[in-house]
Structures are given as structure tokens and as C-alpha cells.
Image 1: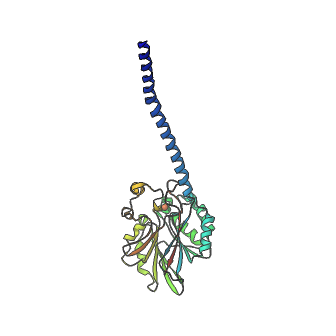
Image 2: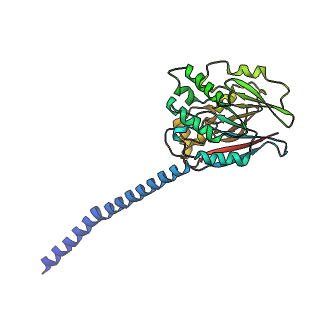
Image 3: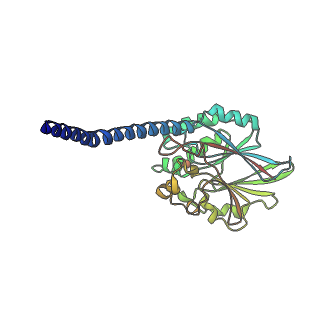
Amino acid sequence: MVTVILIDRLNITKSCITYFIRGVPMTFLYVSFYIFWIVSVAALIYMRFETTLLKVSRVRFTKSKKHLKVVHLSDIHISKMFVKTEKIKKVLTSENPDIVVLTGDYIEAPKDEEKFLKFLEGIKGSYEMFMCFGNHEYKAFRRNKTRLQEFADILESKGIKVLHNKSASFFKNQKKYNIIGLEDIRSVRSDTMKVLDSLDMDAVANIAISHNPDIVFEIPYGKVDYLLCGHFHGGQIWMPFKLEFKLLRNDKLCKMGIIKGLHKVNNTILYINRGLGNVLFPLRFLSPPEIAIIYFP
Ligand SMILES: [Fe+2]
């Protein structure tokens, strides 16, 4: 009798141990795995969704109604842009800006050219359009350097002013504005700053457009009042401890924590646009695509 009870107790203890070792931890592992899987899929779905959003930012340098209204678009990355062109056009139509500026990174390869031209056709309006190139244009045409100029010529033939180390004047309310396009700092092939020596002195403001905001360190003190840039995508996919910049970027401003929005560096007012498209991954997290509306005095 005593022997039977002892064996029974031993069996219960054994099954308890087996349940604890194989049962509880395994159940815990399974549950953890499913939670991780569900959270990852949900995060990916959200990040893909965020690429389709469009946030309109407003930057007012004046309260006067006699302002110059500029729409700033950047980093289109047409092969990985998921904001509908109609959505962008709708903003442009309702804002009715004086000019639209684009600050580089439109195509990844020559094959994207047609799609980008179609996009430009879709956002065309009565406003003048100015643009500069980004590092991705230089990369796309790295095998045939004359193709970059041909691309610029095609854009010019569509009525877009390509400011490749060039400036143009724009008049509004009897005021003259210099719009200056500076070559991408990482792709420089000429004396980028030479254009700043020949600016009209009677302009009320020198507004420069360039792709990489690090160019602000090259601009001679006081030569440019406002600098509009893109390049960082606002981080595109937010990570703790700014890992997205530490792992993928090597630019000076990033290291200073200047990655998006409005700043003053080297006596130049700098606006860094988060851009519309995506690079590497077709995903964004806590950095939705942006159109900036800027009011200049
Ligand atoms: Fe970009």
C-alpha cells in the first residue's frame, strides 16, 4: 500500500516537472513568438501606410500678406514614392504658390526618367518651377556624365528651370528675389560657390536650393539668407538613439542632431524637408512625407 502511494506521488511529481519544463516555457515561447510576429506584421503594415500620407508644413518668415509663397518639394524618389500625384496636385492647386522648388533625388536610374517627367506633368500649374539635382541623379547617370546634362535639357524643355550652380530672378510685389541652385555637396564637379559672386545686389533675399544641407558649411558668411534642402528624409524610419543616422548617414548636420525642419546655421536660415519618396525600403516610421509651404518677406 505504502509502495503504491509512493509510486503515485513520484509519477505526479514527474509529470509536474515535465509540464513545467516542456509545457509552461514552450507555451510562453509560442505566445512570445506569435506576439512578436503580429507586432512586426502590424508595424510593417503601418510603415507602408505612412509612405502614402502627406503632411503640409507651414514656415512663415513674415506675417505680411505681401509675401512670396514657395512650395518646397524634395526627395521624390519616383520609383519608391507612394503619395498619389493627384494628392500633391490638390495641395498645389489649393495653395496657389508663386513658385515651386524641388531639391533633388528624383530618380534612381535612367529608366525612371519617364515616370518622373509624368509626375512633373501631373503637378504642373501656373507657378514657375525651379529645381536642383540630388546625389541620386549623379548616381543614376554616373556611367554617362553627358546624360545628366541631357536630362537637365529635357526638364528645361518642359518649362522647369534647372538651377545647376545658376541663379534666377523672381519678381513679386515689386520685390526681386534671387533663387539660387547649388550643386549637391557630395557630387560637386565645379566651383559651386562661384554663382554667389554674381548675384543681383538689389534683391530683397537670396534663397538657395541645394540637396544636401551640409552645403551650409561651404556658403560664405552672409551670402545666402535662406537655404532649402532635403536629403535626410527626416530619418525615414525612426529608431531609438538616432540609430537611423548613426548607421546610414555620415553628414555633419546629422551628427549635430540637425535632421529636419527649421534651423539657423552659419548665419543662414535652413529648412530641411522630409521629402516625399523613400530610399532603400518602401517604408516610413514617424517621418511622414512632406510638402512645405514657405512664406518669405
Ligand atoms: Fe533622398
